[in-house]
Image (cartoon, rainbow, N blue to C red; front, top):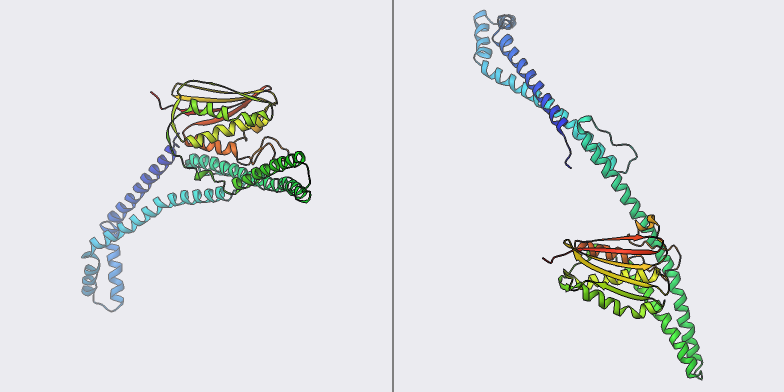
Length: 375
């Protein structure tokens, strides 16, 4: 909705008209009374007397007066009206300059995050409302940026601490294997497997560090092509068997056939993989994750549903912010770096879609909506 500055327009119009009338009246008065009117003879006699006192004869003084004033009458008239025009311009622009100064002061308060309210003259009330809204948005973004930076710093500290555990285990088991060459094959295989698991966990934590250091959502570039979302989701579910088996979970797929879409398959696969991993991380053991996809009304809707604890509404509102993790536990074992959902949101929005989350006492759902390009 555009701001309505009709009051400002009326004020400027009225002031311009009044100033114009005043200048015209003053100009007419000067022309009538001083140039062509009753003061002309008095003024002429005064000038002649002054010149005679300076030593001129009367006829010389009259001739000098005629040459100086009468013959140059048009010049004096034009000069007088130029002075009146400058006065008119100064009066007209002076109020506009005051408006600009008021707006400049209000902008300074906005940019400096001052607690002073934005107050302008009634004519600039729409501008005051706009600047107040901008001020609130800037404060909110500044607060969000500070909270994000704090979460990132805390997460880096947590990850650094968590790196020690698998690294210490890897060194300990490798040292034991190196110092005990006569160890039985069964024990050697057991400790080798444990070492491998710890090394894999160490790799995951290091990858999270890389994600944090290179995190910049603006650098995501899409490489679009025509793809079948139905097949993409089914493949994702098939490949999730190993990950889900750790918690004795299963994945069911209920998707409409041939949901064709013009998008980046790798980026969208990352979105759906993040949603599936998130559902697995926070779902109850032994439960089922349901992936649904339907097309219609010019859009494609994909829903990931898992059975798990309810996510409070306040956390749902922040769940797609970078470095935010639903669980407040110090360990990053389940929550990761808190980048997956933030990146997923950016990828979906770059495709022209939306992503949201809903949670109740039984289920948590992540809903992705993409614009359908099929006729």
